[in-house]
Image (cartoon, rainbow, N blue to C red; front, side, top):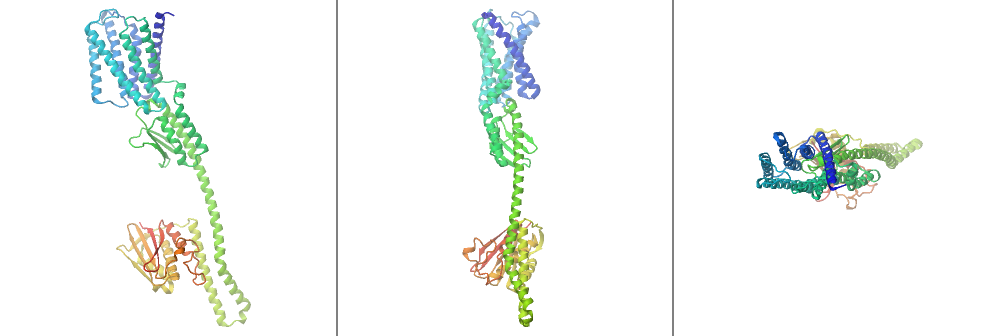
Length: 567
C-alpha cells in the first residue's frame, strides 16, 4: 500500500471512529442529561462534522453557500477546544479571570473567522493578516488544550483507577489532537509523510477519546484490578472472619471508598446508627446508596458521577452483599442472645435453688426440731417450756418468711423482672412510714431530715421503700443508734444517705460489702441476718438506673448513699 493510499485509509478510519465516538457521546448525554456530558457531546460532534461533512467543502469555494460552509467548518475547529474546555471545567469552575480570557479569545477568534475575506488553499500565498489569524488559532487551541489536559490529569490523581485512566485518556486525547491540528497547519502536502504522521496522531487521539468516554469492559476490568483485588479480600472476609455488624462494615468501607474514589465513606444501619466510617466525612456528601437495612454515604469528588458511573453501580452491589452479611450477623446475634438468655435463666434457677436450700436449712431444721419436741414430749413439758418452744417457732417462721421474701426479691432482680413506676412522693412522709415499719419498736432511734428547698421527688416508691428499709435494718443491726436518714432532691436526682454511729465496716470486707451473704465483720451467731440486704438494695438501685455506695462516716460509723434519677 502506497503512502497516498495509507493516508486515505487512516483518514477514513478516523472519520468512521469519530462517528462512533459521536454516537457514544450522544448516548451518554441522553442518559445523564448533565452539563459535563452536554459539553463533551458538543465537542465530539463538532470534530466529527469537521472530519466527515467538512470533507465535502471544496478547497476553492465559490459562491455564498460554499464560502459559508467553509467558514462554518473553520468555526467548528474554533469551537471544538472551547467545548472541550467547558467540559473539563464543568466539574470544578475555574477562576473568573481565566473564564473571561477564554471566552473573549473564543469570541474574538469567531469574529475574525467570519471577517476574513479570503482563506487561501494549501499552495496559495498567505497574507500577513491570515498568518496572524493562524497563529491566534493555534494559540487558542494550545491554551485550551493545556488547560484541559492539566485539569483532567491532575484531578485524576485522587480518583480510583478506572476514573483516573479515563480522565488521563481524555487529557491525552486533547493534547494529541492539538499536536495533530498544529501539524495540519504546517503541512502543505496532504499525502506526504508529515500528513501520515498527522493522521496517525489523529487516530491515536480518537482512540484515546473512545477509551475516555466509553472504555470496553475488558479495559475497565484491567484498570479496576487493584481495587477489585482488595474488595474481593474484604468481601471474602465477611463470610469467614467478621462476626459483628461493626466489624463487617469496617472491613468494607475502606475498599468501597477506594473503588468510587471517595475521600470519605460511612455506613449506617436501618436505625441510622453509624456502623463504620473511612476517611474524611465532613462537608457536603455526594452519593447515597439506600437499602432496607443499610445506608451508604460517600463523600465523592465532582468527577466521580461522570467517570465512575460503573463504580457507583458496583457500590450498590457491594451494599446489597454487605446488607446480606449484616443480616446474617443479626440472625447470629439473635440466636446467641437467645442462647445466653436460656443459659442465664438456667443459671439463675440453679443458683436460686442452691441459695434457697442453703439459707432455709437452718430455720427449717430448727422448726422441725421444735415441732418434734412438742409432738413427742409435749405431755412431759411444763407450760413455761411449751411457751418457750412456741416463741422459738414464731421467731423461726418470721425469719423464714423474711428470708423467702428476700429470695423472691433476688429472683425478680436477677430476672430483670422489676418494673419501675415513678410517682410523685413526699420525701419526709414516705421515709418516716418506711422507717416505722422497718425499725419497729426502735423507730425512735432513727432521725429523718429532708434538706434543701424541694421536699418532693418523682421515683418508684416501692423501690425506695426496699432500699431504705434494708439500709435502716442493717444500720440498726450492725451499727449503733442514733441512725440518721438524710434526703435531698435537686437537679433531677434524689439522694438518700443512711448513717449510723457504730464502728463502721471492717476494711477487709469493703470491696465485697455488696456481695451476697457478706456480713459486716460480725459472727453469724452474734447478730442475726442473711447477708442479702445490701445486695438487694444495690440491685434495686441499679434497676432504677441509680447507684448505691458505701462511705466511711466521720468520726465513726457506716454511711450508705443511694442516688436515683428523679424527673
